[in-house]
Image 1 (tube, one colour):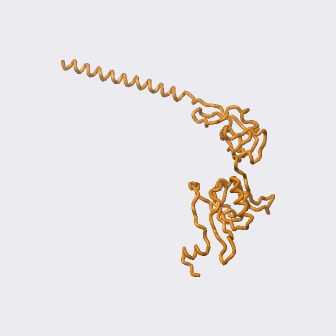
Image 2 (cartoon, helix red, strand yellow):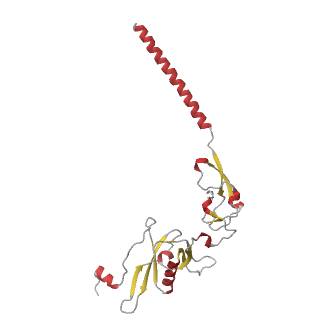
Image 3 (tube, rainbow, N blue to C red):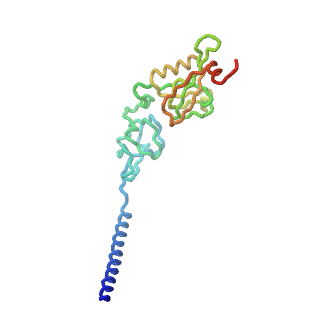
Length: 239
């Protein structure tokens, strides 16, 4: 009886080993089959080199590239004909996919107005503030305008206040090798009223400085205007 028990136990072990080996073989075959299967790709249109904003796309600017199907960006174009003749709304880096939202049918027009939303205007703001002059203000930075203005007659007519806030720098215009005497100015896209405020500050000979704000700070801040009385009261300056 004991011998018979040992026989069935041994038989069970042998069958278990055989089953394990067989399952492992099947799993290995499936793994090899998956590894051997090439990933599915899709041919999309990419920029052959860096393309600036407001450029009319030509076939020479574009190329086809195979992308893994699961990595194709939303809005990517597969047909070159959908891109040629369109105008770019934003820069497209070399090798990047050309997306439907980055281009506009503008009948070959390339002006700055193509990238400005209704109700906004593009303005140039000349400035010689230290940060801009030192190269610390770059495209994409957000700045606040700090202005010292004369508010009237009297012994201490000047007031300093944060005025327009969170302006995005669209372009920095400065001297070039061809135009070494050209002044420095920043361009902003603003609403019509803000454009008037900035023009008044410039025309009124206000003293302007720019403060570069953190990219993480998007809300306007409330500040108190500063004059000599504020300084005396806040810092105990003897008069």
